[in-house]
Length: 153
Image 1 (cartoon, rainbow, N blue to C red):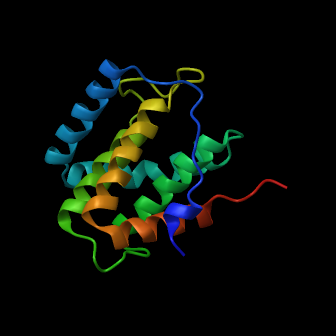
Image 2 (image 1 turned 90 degrees about the vertical axis):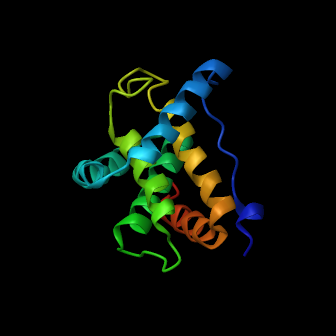
């Protein structure tokens, strides 16, 4: 199955202006370059709770963010780690998850309605990087994230 045909477009509740988008991108790329073991320990201590909280939200875009983060963590942690994951892929994933777990980022997560917009952008940048750099890992993450989103009955 080609995920590009199955991928549902997620509509965010608001948009991020170009200047803020660039600030978020630069912050994330800088974090990729610096990602280290201390970041991994921080993420490992927080990511499961963050993913659970996002998956319990009513908004589809927040559920998708949680599911994608959960799949990224599985790829990074080795739980279901695809064998073709490189150290560079790991740094992109770790930096995105660190950003998501940090509640005091560019748009603080507790900001009503918009708190996770910057986090969604960072995760999207990570996923787009993986789509180019490691298409098989991207496909795995896409399939796994769709499996993590449970339809509401």
